[in-house]
Length: 236
Ligand SMILES: NC(=O)c1ccc[n+]([C@@H]2O[C@H](COP(=O)([O-])OP(=O)(O)OC[C@H]3O[C@@H](n4cnc5c(N)ncnc54)[C@H](O)[C@@H]3O)[C@@H](O)[C@H]2O)c1
Image (cartoon, rainbow, N blue to C red; front, side, top):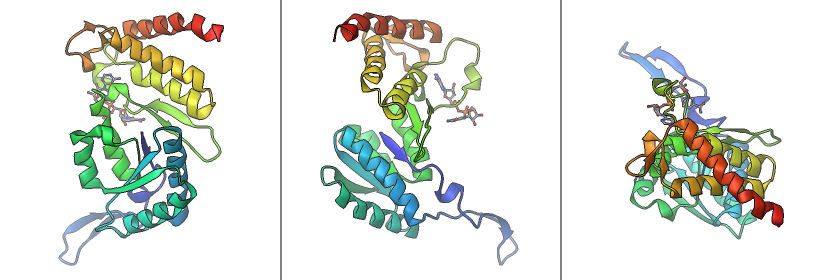
């Protein structure tokens, strides 16, 4: 799980713009800036998230060179004392990018700033095979959240029945868990996706062997798996 700060950092920091340097050459510039409250806010979300998972949180920064990252690390470390049940570690972003590929299982929950999270979440998606596999949640303090796949509208395959629907389906599971507190229903969707994959169904983006299907058929198979779980759920 990558918890990415979404409303601050270099994508929004000021000053930003175009200018000229002392030699008259054109320059483009941006500002990486974080206020303490922005770091605290996302840190609390991350610790709470890690608590619901395997209780391991890795904070990713570039505190060896960036002041905004030094503050990030200081604030996250301070907040860790509120969550003694969560094991906190820190990693520089360049190392994290490498470790994600070398040994992804060492991570449970990652928390990081806007730009590092932008890049690492796309990298993490490829561990699952495709960006067509990964859901996301944008959570405000008071809600409502926004739940969507991490990918965009995939214009290059539009209308060809090739898109992998699983990231979108799994976004509905996130909505149920993090938006509505419906853990059982979320699990039901996730189990159906897993079962569909275990049966060998694959859209083109994740196909190497198994049964190659289109977007529509993949959706049908997930529905079938959900239907097959219903009696057990009703029986409880
Ligand atoms: N979260 C978001 O809202 C979000 C994220 C990325 C891009 N976008 C927007 O989407 C549009 C297209 O952007 P892009 O092409 O850079 O990124 P994209 O994620 O739409 O596509 C990137 C590549 O991944 C493939 N891909 C994406 N989703 C897939 C899926 N479900 N199954 C199989 N393959 C899939 C596409 O075919 C394409 O080759 C742009 O307007 C962009 O701004 C939105």
